[in-house]
Structure formats: structure tokens, C-alpha cells
Amino acid sequence: MFIGQFEHAVDQKNRVAIPVKFRRSVKGGAVITKGLDGCLFLFTADKWQKMAQSIGQLPVTKSSARVFARLILASAQEVQFDKQGRILLPQYLAKYASISRDAIVVGVYDRIEIWDKARWNRGVEKDEGKVGKAVEELSEFEI
Image (cartoon, rainbow, N blue to C red):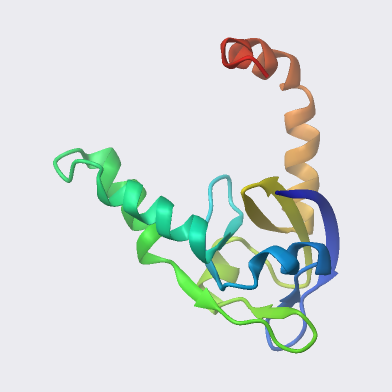
């Protein structure tokens, strides 16, 4: 399980460090892709395999399924960790998420999200006002 948030600088080669605490769970490989809300998603290889299979089962006749599959699958790339625990952010993904200098690496249960720091801070401020309504809407899921 991934939890917590960490701030890391993006170096000139577009690499960002993934916290040691997260890297322990990603030893079998990882896949990075476009995420939702303007961030990047980083999945373990096992989680990626399950998710890709689920997306592959969506009906190709539904436009929403095609759009989602393109967003997640077409932009995906396997990543390797260097000796310092950094991954290379492909240019097209860094551009999508507006990540250039400072990044926030966030654990969200079964995935890691990588955010541009300024975008993350704006989103947190905006979302804090929506928490009560979100909890109310999700109450049927017994959280």
C-alpha cells in the first residue's frame, strides 16, 4: 500500500526520485502513464497488468471506453529505477502533467501519483472545500 506525500526536484534530465518507502513495493517493475486530474500514475507491474486487462475488457463500441483506454494505455511506458531511485519522466508525460522543476510524489493506496508542485497545491486547496460532500456521496461504500 502506498501512502504519504513527498516533495522532490526534477533534474535537468527529467528524472524524479521515488521515495525509498515506495520503491520497496515496486521491485518487480513499474509502468508510468497519464493519470486523471492532470497528474501521472505510476503502477507496479502487477497492478498494471490487472488494470490493463480490465481496460481491455471494456466494450470498444462505447466512446468513453475508447477514450479512457487511449488515455491510460497509449501513453503508458515501462520505467527503470537508477541507482539513486530515480525514474525518467518521458517528455510527453512531463508536458501532460506540467511537471518541470518541483514534483510531489503521492501514495494513493495502489498507485503512486506524480504531480507538478504548483498544480498539486492548487488542487489541494480546491479539494479541501469538497471533502464533506465527497464523504457524503461515498458513504454507501462504507468507508
